[in-house]
Every structure is written in C-alpha cells, then in structure tokens.
Length: 168
Image 1 (cartoon, rainbow, N blue to C red):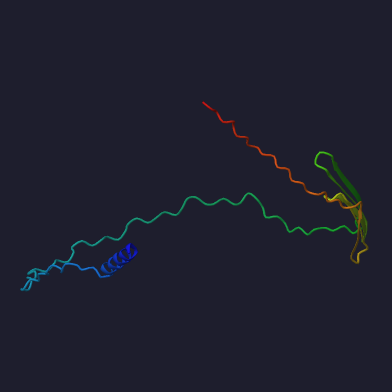
Image 2: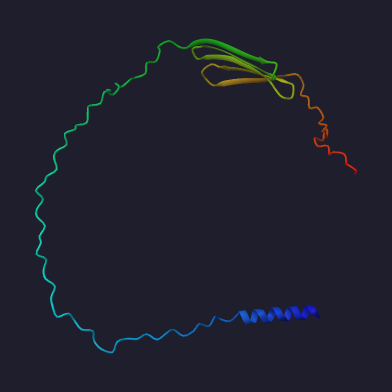
C-alpha cells in the first residue's frame, strides 16, 4: 500500500514539474507622441588641416657585416681503388651478469667470413657462421647443449607480520 502512495506522489511531482514556467508580463514601453526637435544649426567644417610631414627618416648608418666564414667547397668523397681487407674479433665473458658472447670476421675483397656466438637463456650456446662471396649471405646456425626449462615453483614469503595483540 505504501508503495502505491510513493508512486502516486512521484507521478504528481512529475506532472506538476512538467509545465512551462510562467513569467510576469513585460512592463509597458512608453513612446513619445511627438516628433523630437531637430537642431537649428549646422556643424562647421574643420578649420585645421594637418601639414605635410617635414621630417624624413634617415638612411640607416649600420650595415650588416660580411660573414666571417666561407661556404665549404664541394667535397667529392674519395673511394679507395684497392679492395677492403681486414680481420677483427671481440669477446665478452662477464661472470657477474652472465653475459657471454663474441664475434669474429675477416674480409678480403668481396669474400667475407665470420662467426658469432651467444649464450641463450635456456642454457644453450648459439653459433652462427656466415660467408659472403659477393653473391649473397649464407649463414649456418647451430646450437650446443640442450635447452633446460626448470619447473617454476613459486614460494610465498609474506613481508608483513602483524604485531601480537596487546591485552590490558
């Protein structure tokens, strides 16, 4: 029964609020019933005329200096007439971080040979040997060792230990 009363009250409130607002009528506007008088005189023409300017701006006394630098001459790169020939290698073995990798390469003209190694996270070592005779790169990838995936065993270690209750 009380639900019906509440619903009826809500419907009544909505019905009363749904009407457009009513404003008071605007105040009357009074318009004079006669013609306003017009001025009996005419405004005089201005007697002052601006003179022509007698001052002319001077030419600037400052001239921009010539640049202190000179544009570089066109440089044509020089390429050696002999084919490249080099050997290099490097290696990193860091026990603290566990990084272990290396690279070596030799080149004589268009023939390039090299290899690089890297320890993978799964415990294997990846070895890549490559050769390029000028007609494209040929790479051979091999792996040493066997991949190891240890079973993950999460250990719960709570960091918060509540204080024992204090009894009074």
